[in-house]
Length: 147
Length: 142
Image 1: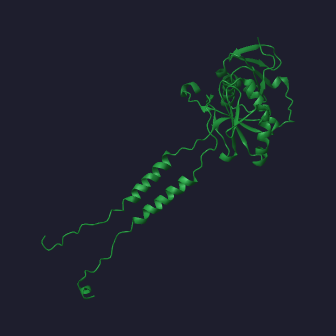
Image 2: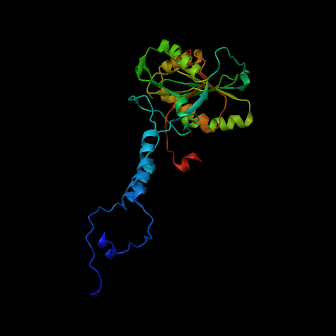
Image 3: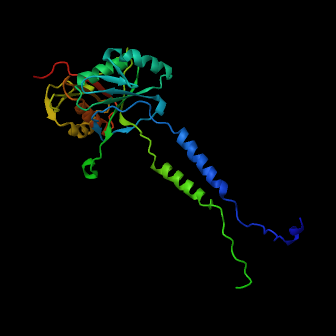
């Protein structure tokens, strides 16, 4: 108590306290890490078809259903292996559930015989699906060739 | 000089730069994260009961053979022209200019690889073709 008189007076600080900025940045970082969603189903090993007119699928991520079609005709939907003739039974309820907004992204191997692709299409038609995208890698064409 | 008080050694870890580090991390992840956006050739399938009658005159038949060669047949004429999938784009532009109600009918050989169909579809979509029908080639050429 006696020594109080001898203490130096603290000077008012001119700095903005920056210590809490770090916490805010980390909160943002954690928020984005948690809220970022990744596609649900696992990628199959297929050789992609290439197309130069490939456009982005104009639908929300949750409205896109990937249908994988492998070279030997095996079909995978949501990481489940399916027989070709049950595809429509699987897709139809999903299509209904999405409010008919579902877009089917057909991810076919480039060497698949077309008969199988056609069969898959027939299945999708009988499931009532209207919007289908043949997923493909974008082909970079030379500018000169395009003209 | 002599009147200055000696600086005391600070025992704290400087935290002011932590914010910068966190922001750098944040910006790094924001920039480097790419969301895989699917790309592809969109088509609209017909409804199960839907059948559209198209006059033969308005159909451009494109038959894709097993070897990838496209056989072009215009409407009612029996003349067959053989072209490569890449050339379909130019062909469509020409034909469409003379007949705006043209429909492209792609028929693919059952054993032909899917990529040939994608090539032709790609060429047609590059040429802004809207009306495309996809079918199986029923009588495979020998």
